[in-house]
Image (cartoon, rainbow, N blue to C red; front, side):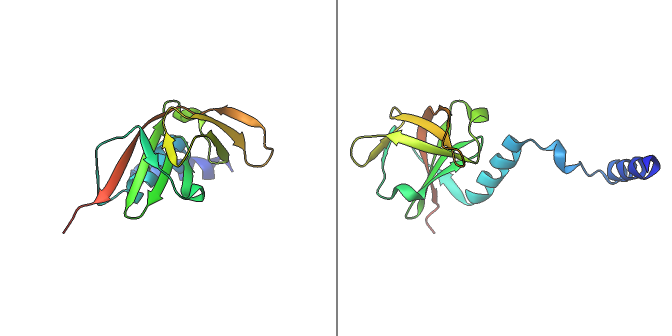
Length: 132
């Protein structure tokens, strides 16, 4: 069995292909976000955005929060990305229809409902497609 494992490892190295486990969860999340934002240009960051539909607010593991609003995708990166997991649900205490980076935010585990951490965001950056 050991010769087969060694042969597989040598084959991977010979082909110049990195094993799938070499990429970290943060790198995979950044790659997925970059793919989603492909063809879009970043706009002027804002401290607050108007959020009409909370169920469009999405957690991107080890990145932050993403909110789609019409043709715009808003991205707010977290100040502690390694603490944000895919199964975290953000609990946000806000006033009115504005979602602001200074709002009180915490996360809970999707399956147990237990507290998993506090969420601190950078500014919301809008990504839009360039006008033709």
